[in-house]
Length: 248
Image (tube, rainbow, N blue to C red):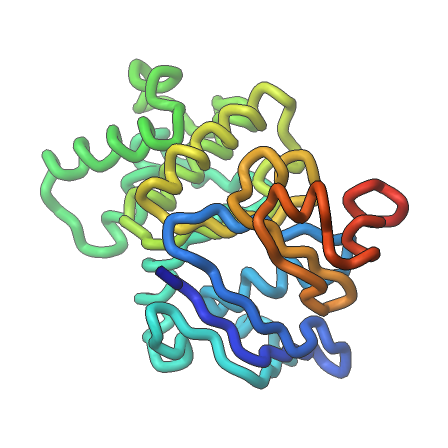
C-alpha cells in the first residue's frame, strides 16, 4: 500500500532549483532510506512531506505531493504535521523534565486525562528504547541525558502524538556507534506501526535499516530500488560511484 505519491515535483529557493521533476512513492510500513551527497536535495525532499519548506520566504514549487491520495496542500498544516512527525539531526529537548518533554505535544493537542498522559508517555519511551534508562528519573531535566538519550527522547515526543509517518533527517549524525545502534533498533521496530523516511549520509546505515533506498544527486532522483539491489547491483553508474565512495 502506498502512503505518499510524489508527482513531477520541482522546488526552488529564490532562483536555485533544489528538486527537479521528482517522481517517487513511499510505501506504508517501510523504511525508505534517502542517500546522496550534500546539496543533492535529500532534506528538501523530506521537508516537502510535511510542508516545512513553506517556512522559507522564497520557496516555490510545482507538482503534487499526496498522502493517502489527498494532496497535502488541501490538508491543514497543523493536522498534516501531527500525521507526519519529524526528528531532526540535532536533538532538541525542551527545557522541561523528561516526562514533560514527551507530554508536551499531548498538552498542545488538548489532552487532559492524567492517566492517559502516563500511559502514552510510558509507551512512547518504550517504543524509542529509552524507558529502562529513564523510568526512575522522569522528573529530571531532559538536559541531563546524553546526546543519544536526548535523540531517543525526541523520538518519544514525536511518537506521543500518534503520527502515521516519521521523517528522520540524519538523526544519528552526532551520535556514537552505541547510540546509533539503539536508534536504528528503534526504527526497525517502529516500522511495524509507522511509515519511516530516513535521510542519512551514512550509506552503511541506509543498507542496515532501509527496505528500499533512493539515491538523489543534484536535485534529481537517480534511482530507487530494494536496498539489496541498490547496494549490490545499482542500475546507474552514478549510484555505484557514490555508494562505493568514489565521490560524495
